[in-house]
Length: 240
Image (cartoon, rainbow, N blue to C red):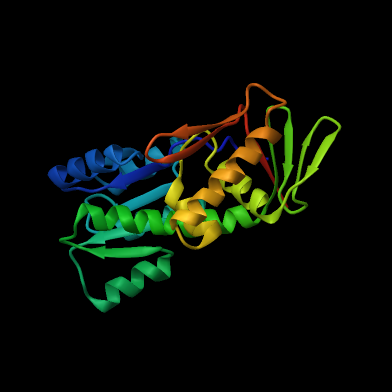
């Protein structure tokens, strides 16, 4: 079973330029990430060993321990945590070295903070997509949602879900206790976010609410101007 799905993404940021590091940390925190800043690779490794990080952003040229060495040590501890390198270097050899070590992306300075955010989010989408394919079921409140069987159970009540109901509930579970953005759901399930598809999704949300009425602790909330929130106490997922 996995951990509850409503935790923030926690980023390890190593950048020896104090001003740039503070700007990046503040920007990422403003965008909803948890972010810890360290000025060199040695401090970054110490923090990684003590804490839990979902993502690493490493400057290449740092004192005491450079970004490549730091990444190699992190990779020895965790082969899957995503890593982005930040560097003033643009030589092909350096870029290739970063990818050989196991970096997921490489950003050359100067860059915009928005670009870093978009690259982090793109990598997270790939990682989550890969992880979500392995999830076979979710447990929350009194419910068991078996994704591949397309079944939602509450005690001895078992409901066979349609494909759209299943896909929508799956997305809600992936974003449980957070906001599932309306446009993201429409483009993921209905491909297009036009008016008619939006009305169709509203119908399916209503259907899911009826199926979830047997546990008062579980509900789907409207988040005005944004989308929906599945309130799902102690949600956990089971994988293959």
